[in-house]
Amino acid sequence: MSSQSSARRTADPDRQFLKTAMAVPLLEREEELALATAWREDGDEQALHTLTTAYMRLVIAMAARFRQYGLPFADLVQEGNIGLMQAAARFEPERGLRFSTYASWWIRSSIQDYVLRNWSIVRTGTTAAQKSLFFNLRRLRALISDVGGSAMTPENRAYVAEALKVGEDDVDAMAARLAAVDRSLNAPLAEEGEGEWQDLLADDRPDPETAVMESRDTATRHQWISEAMNRLSERERHIITKRRLIEDSVTLEQLGGELGISKERVRQIEHQALMKMKKSLIEIAGDPEEAGLIPAL
Image (tube, rainbow, N blue to C red; front, side, top):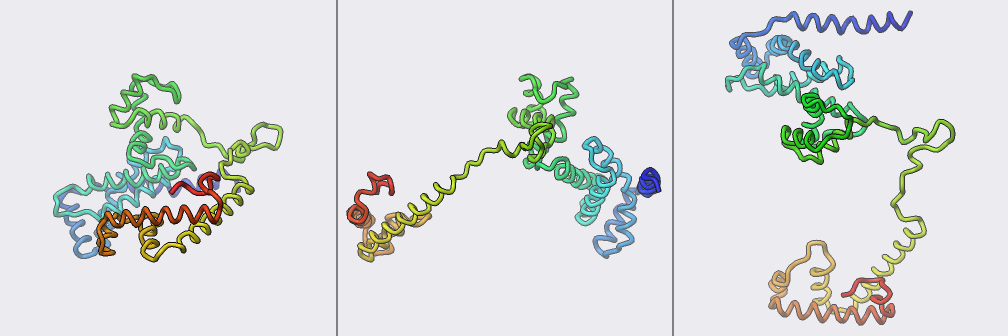
């Protein structure tokens, strides 16, 4: 069995599906309303089937607009079908809107999301500005005869940014992204040799020796501070903990209300406790400030 015959048999069902879908007549407004109401209020699956089948041609036409992104047309149609079914599930007939108009948005959105997910292994179009540029930049550049690759003149860049209401930096970034191709980090640097592109990536992490030293220094600092805290009174430890050792520290006024004293008295106790801790730390570890082991209190 030849591969050509196999490909022909695979393509035939797709062509038959397209031919059948395009032959289904469109619905009048009253028919749409009746079918949508029957599905929404009575759960009539036959009405749902009739309604969606009538607008399969809308899915096909929308999918054809995205063929230039290099994705399988059958997959684009299937994603459009998902959007069509979402439209049928959310459509509210009482609003008086044509189902075909409402479904167009859902079909286009579903296909666009699929294109963004699959056009590249690198995620593209994560913001509204990037999404708008991804689907419109080539068209706008063609309108102004700008076909110079990723580089754009200041005038053309400003035109696109104004037309799409995005920043000029976003225009430059997307132009460069669309002009580039995906490259594997495992691709060889040259035809001969064993080096790969990933070998050129810098590792910003600390080396094992530095990591061990930082871990031991951190543990030592914690031990020193714990010993200094143990030399404080219960009220002093409470104030230092609430003011210095938790992420969401409390105010002097809040602590004063909790302890039944003025906020000025809380400030005085805090200052006295910090001085006690500084003295204790010097006794325990010499002068940690000079050694750079703990920050100044």
